[in-house]
Image (cartoon, rainbow, N blue to C red):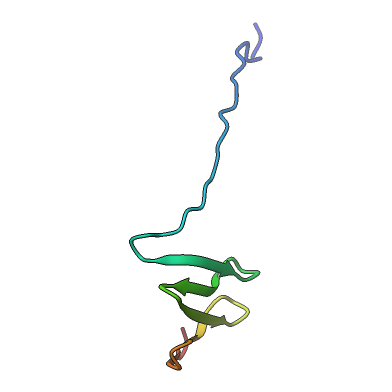
Amino acid sequence: MSNQNKRTFARAKVFYLYTAHPDKKISSIKYNYLNLPQQVIQDSKTTYYIYRADGTKVKKSGTAGLATDYLDG
């Protein structure tokens, strides 16, 4: 008696496609080395995010001149 599997299965091909978010009007997202959004362009306005090394969000700023500082995330 053998424990070897006698069946072979073909691997399914998986495709990932990025499309713009028309409902949110997001046209571009750039990620940092932690895979967190660093720059988001939405409806012709750019928002920037700054994180600590552990991934905690520190600041959010935008082209409109508004900025939000986060205390301890």
